[in-house]
Image 1 (spheres, helix red, strand yellow):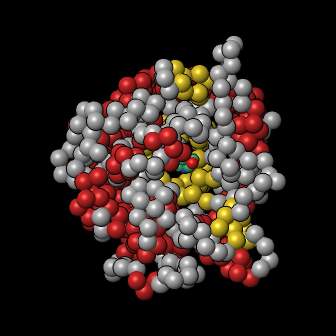
Image 2 (cartoon, rainbow, N blue to C red):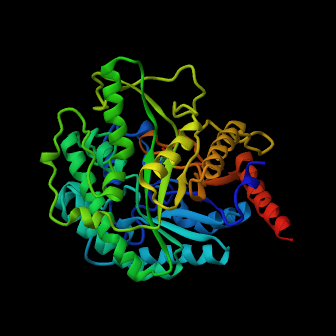
Length: 453
Ligand code: IFM
């Protein structure tokens, strides 16, 4: 029933990212990324795992495109590994890296699947970390502009939609502020500066992508989570308000209003943020859609927390949770879409990630039964449909993820895929949720062809 509620032209997709699936980190001229380095630090990743092999997608790409064809998706959101294309971050181009993405795009085209590449899903070339301090350095933004140029010249004719950045909140605040992602710095001031340079990189890339790839749509993907105070205590309310601005509004304000929000975290001052003349205009470059990633909401109480400068997240023990410990809270997706539309009116939105991790196993009969994931998707799609019924423009939905994959600091123990991956054998098994998604997409198409005839 859910799928038939969506319009005929609605885009049904699946999503992945390079470091999480490709493996082959030292092959065909790829340079190291900050995630290769971070994974080597003892104790940073569960079970000391790395993305060295991951899903071996670099070698199994044709099989994975075949699975997408079997699922009947309209679109594939993947990311391009910057260090595969420019091993030193800028300068010499690695043609073999570009060739891999050309083959992928060509095979997608043959399968009738639209390509939605993301340019940056956190795997910064290590060389840029060494030279500029990564995103702390303004030059990283200019390097990104050059990278966008190289990639869009080579691949632009085959791309339906470009996404400049994935979740810059994660690659700035979480990575330079809290230290829980690569490169693992712990200074909120650096997090704020990295966030600005990521936004600048996005703004510099937009006109380049438009010039080199005039038929493609261009957007950016941000992550959202409603953040609520754990109690009525004024200090909890203040902490939740600051965290809400930090997580949910920090990037939207400059993108759509040309300024930073004036609510900031305690002990931080905008005065310390280095912004050059013209930056805000560059960042505000007009885009065609906003990508929305949504998984859960958080309850926050003020107070010292070793890893989270925003306060302390309160475990939602009463609620249904995924194996990440995240509350299943579908209403939050409706609230998020509506809030963004009402405050910023981006014109069009794509849900570029939504999904759930559960401890799936392949049963003796070869099936992977994951009813909780199906329920998760159903309930969230209901909320997308509800938002659309209320006039919020949403034109597509990408399930996270096509495949079980490397879940960053969680390693391989969190399985988000519609397709199970046996990491010993690299055998892929479509889960029941994958078949459910396939059948839903087909039902949506059928409903519209019936209506048309
Ligand atoms: O796996 C990640 C993805 O890389 C970015 N968004 C959230 C997902 C689940 O944690």
